[in-house]
Amino acid sequence: MPPGSPPFQILHLEDNEVDHELVLLALQRDGLAVQATWVDTRAAFTRALEAQPYDAVLADYNLPDCTALDALKLLKARQPSTPFIIVSGAIGETAAIALLHEGGSDYVLKDGLHRLRPALQRAIEASQNLIAREAADTKLRESQQRIAELARHLQTSIEAERTAIAREIHDEIGSVLTALKFDVSWISRHATDEAVVNRALDSLETIDQAIQSTQRIMVNLRPAVLDQGLVHAIEWLARSFEKRTGIKTVFHTTHEDISLPDEVQQVAYRTAQEALNNVFKHAHATEVTIDMTPDTGVLSLEIADNGKGLHDADLAKPKSFGIRGLHERAQTVGGWVDVSTSQQGTAVILSVPLMNLEYPSMQRPPA
Ligand SMILES: Nc1ncnc2c1ncn2[C@@H]1O[C@H](COP(=O)(O)OP(=O)(O)OP(=O)(O)O)[C@@H](O)[C@H]1O
Ligand SMILES: [Mg+2]
Image (tube, rainbow, N blue to C red):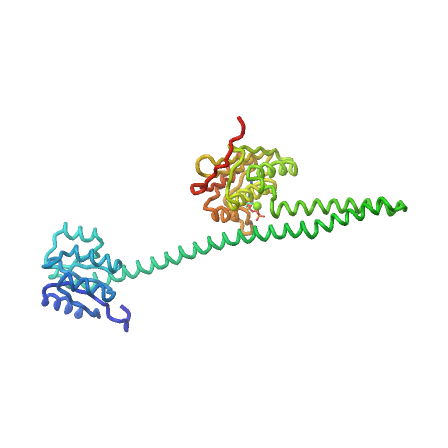
């Protein structure tokens, strides 16, 4: 122990005062500073444990009103991480093993007290390490929980923000473009100068493009199609992906309609969206299959392509956030994402347990 450290607080359960003195002498002789509390009955032992914490407990094996095993149980119930060492005249191997099995730290024979100091020190250090490790584990768990809560909060805020922006684009820009289209259209019909008419018609085309762009942006920000349910939304996503990219996209589902909480729908939709974007950007695929099944109490959504596949190193790219984001999104609803790959292509699979969810409005498609 480092110089200047306070003495170890030891509780000694021993019915023979001379033996107690001998233990103290042995520790003193071996240079270990201890402050010892001596008790010789079960009641005094219990009171002492309830009064203050100890660095270690030493106990005789044979006591008039309790066994060492009783003492060990009393200790574990009150100070579970405090080490317990038997200091006894004689203890059989079976008894020693039984004690160690119940959580005792060590045993020292009364005629071998030179072993007491190293045994005591080792047991105290082991218990302090254990306490430190448990504290670190608790901190780690708490911080993981905070990160998970933060991720969930971020997802919710991002979706709320996207909805608000989509609404604003619709209300502010959308209505201005519609009014503009109305005015320019009026000009094109009433202008007499051909050059003005042509310029107005060009402007109408430009306005139409702007209207289409705002609609595309709004859909990306907040897919209104989700209001009609996840099955319709994924179907729509598959169709528009095929139209936009020319990559054949097939969607299979075992149910026509699934009633799921908003967050689960958002996570599933965004997963399909990112997986399809990746197919377009990276896979060089000619076909994608999307499978959605909520059959086994787990919503499973698989997006599989027949492209070039990927490597572990691709997933570790420092500036790629798509798949990393999918893992985090899935966790916010208690789910997870698997990415499997082979020479036949890549599959992204989202799984979300639905154990606590009711889905009364699930309908199978007509046979
Ligand atoms: N379907 C796929 N087929 C082949 N490679 C893929 C596929 N999906 C992802 N990858 C590889 O994995 C990498 C990581 O994908 P991820 O979606 O995380 O990032 P990203 O698409 O590169 O960027 P972003 O952050 O914009 O999504 C990609 O850069 C690509 O190399
Ligand atoms: Mg990506």
